[in-house]
Length: 177
Image (cartoon, rainbow, N blue to C red; front, side, top):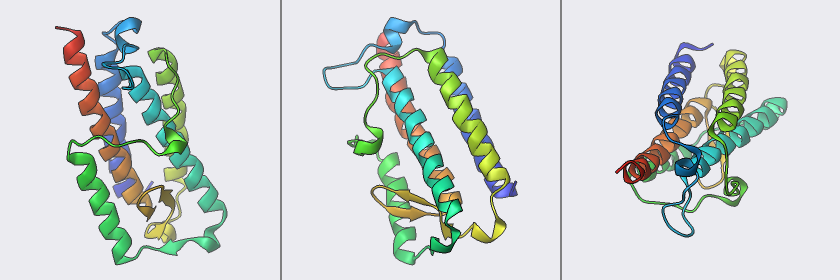
């Protein structure tokens, strides 16, 4: 695996495992309790994170099969990637794109962890085999910002994770008071 991709992947894994270990101390009712009507429970946030990674992986695989269609990343697309990073770190809440907005009402954390493990194993396989010559090509199409390189995609997944982790930590603090 490319050393930069490996570093990003390992950071994603460390963050995910730390969060899931923290959440394992809560019971199913706590994990499935929404803080307010129309708001997601902690488990729904986890389900969303899993779904985002699965869809990103599907998108990457699709693009890898059609390498002739891959685009160079423009300066405008790089600026959009930076704006996405800033938006996720802003603390603002955003409506999830329709493709990743449908999460179950109730979920079980062990099942979500198993599903996420599988997605991560598959992501690791794709990163290990990722062609060096495609590192700077647009491989993942984010629904808002457009194409991202594989490195930008991993950065997005980390930033997106952190965005939701903050929300889940705030919910957890309210539950354990």
